[in-house]
Length: 246
Length: 246
DNA sequence: CGGTTTTTTGAAAGGGCTCAAGATCCGTGG
DNA sequence: CCACGGATCTTGAGCCCTTTCAAAAAACCG
Image (cartoon, rainbow over all chains, first blue to last red; front, side, top):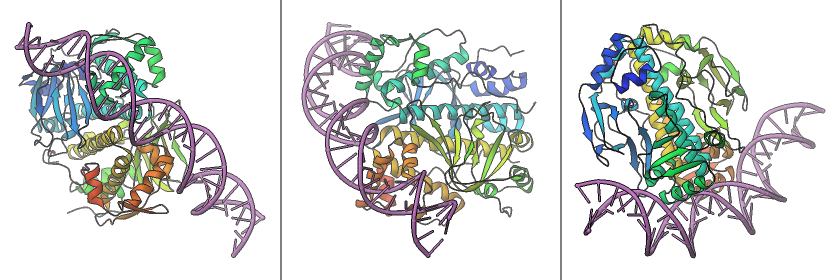
């Protein structure tokens, strides 16, 4: 039933509902152009006028802001198939910087590309709305981990979330992946110092929870990690029962 | 141009766009029923099947989860005019408990009430989508404060956000309001102990930033507070330029 | 290879937490 | 209108997790 594609976006959205040909065609517009980035490139700056959104075609990207104190906070991570900026359509200026965590490719498309979807496909609109909602549920979980858990819990939660998100587009995902993040970046994501991330990672290794080999992370005891941070995979399945038929 | 109403929801949404008669009629369905709660009442529990969403007619409500450690995290605060549960439509079960912070009234409506909007009004759909997006931007700000700021910064940010949200429906809002939250609840919202909230509040008072008289909070030096936590009011204005015409 | 980025480790300081206990406030019932 | 009991606020003292500051080792990249 599903549409054949080499588009990460269609692959991701198709995971949730069967996309009609017309829907796939609408989405294809989003990936008409593309732009390559290398690690550490800045895609756009906070306060830049929001002219377009992006589809991530490949690579890891992240959104972050700097605080007056010099601290940095990573707000979001973006992987292949993700849409960047969907929640910023309400703003006239970007709310955070975006940078490339690895080399990769983005597909920019005009902000009002969404208008076309909203007027032509209630069903696809409902899906975009749901992706947005899902993002919020996941951010809630993150807030909980960051506000209320210690370093081990925060890292466990981050890793589980990253794996869960990858499993949407790669259902056969194993227990190992290459983390395209320095320990400093990890720290800025969960509200810890890079230094403390280092010590905590070491501790988690000694406890047999994970193994780090260079930038390759292996989850050795996923059940224990899930228990530790009461992780719940919000990403894999969503309720589409209320969606408009068309 | 705007529709006459005694509905908080219409008042809030009408702040952002001119609502057509038909849109107001659609929204009216959301407030067909209502239910009263008194302080400390539980509205629904985590993992309850999600059968309906709510419009807050009056009072303060909050969504929270408990951690295995016994800690509590408040995920969201809800005020008059807010919609509760819009991001949970993707879930089959509730992601957090909801309780009444003060006495108040909610209007429950069926989850698929949204379907009607999605199929009949692209413009109103875009607005609901935007409210969702706005919520995310605000949650991002919150995450930043909680992950990266000290106690004073976190409280300053929380208070400014609460005031900003109230100003949407009450443009004439002064510098004083009754906080319908115990210090414990405040702490669970920003990731601090109730005890430390107490000490920090005292400190902020001594520094002339705020004044607390019972549960009444006055912002004495809003500019200083905004600087302290680099606060930006995301709530007052949104970009509607890309909205479908109808 | 040489320079930059990242990881690793140590020692000391600090902000917020825990535990404990007394004071106050507030709603409810008599 | 007052008394009672639970909820909330306050304050003290000591502890602990995480941060800071510093510096060396390792890994990475062109």
